[in-house]
Image 1 (cartoon, rainbow, N blue to C red):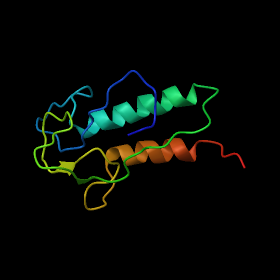
Image 2: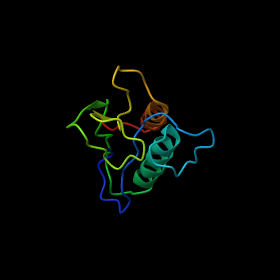
Image 3: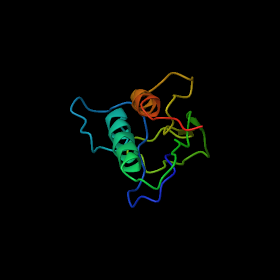
Length: 108
C-alpha cells in the first residue's frame, strides 16, 4: 500500500473481476487498484513538501486463513494487494506505478 496519511481507506485487492461490468469504484478489482494508485500518486505529486513515495506491497503473499482484508471477493489465505501477483506476474497497477516513477525527476 502506498505510504500516506490520506483519509482514503485501502481495500483494493487485485483478485480477478467477478462481473463483466466491474466499475472503477468496485473494490476487489484490478481497475479499482489501478485507479486508487493513480489518484494517490497524483496527490503525492501535487504535494510540494513531499519528497518521495513508495508502494508498500510489491507482491501478493500468504496471510492467516479466513482473512479477507476488505475484499468483497476474498481468496484467503492470499493477500491480493501487491503490484505483482503471487507468482510474480505484473498486475495492471504495476504499469501505473512504473510510469509514475519513471516520469519523476530523481535528485542526487
